[in-house]
Image 1 (cartoon, helix red, strand yellow):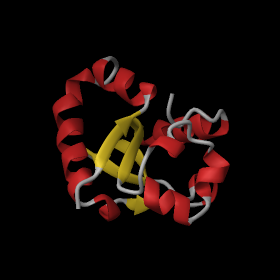
Image 2: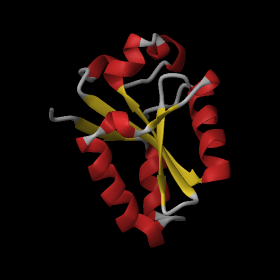
Image 3: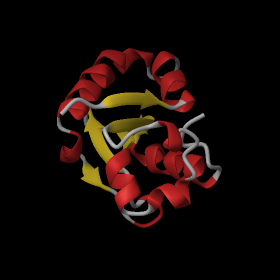
Image 4: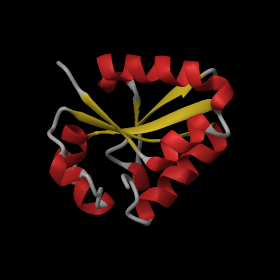
Length: 117
């Protein structure tokens, strides 16, 4: 199956700024996720409907598979601005950050309705 990738402003700014040193690792992990999106760890509680994948041990990518997010009803909670424009075969890359920060950042973006802007 071919998936379409979308990247939040936060994700793009982070890999071209603070995490530029691991940009190639992030790009490689994005390619892997695009091939096998359901291999990531399903998240729970406030981030139910999202998934995560680790990079180089301490870094985490948080992302959403649109089909799964809709099936779980999380699209109504997250209010993703691009949701109406995407089909089920889309993946939204929300954030990439050190492990301790990634979930906090994702929660903040979700709470503000800024999954995609």
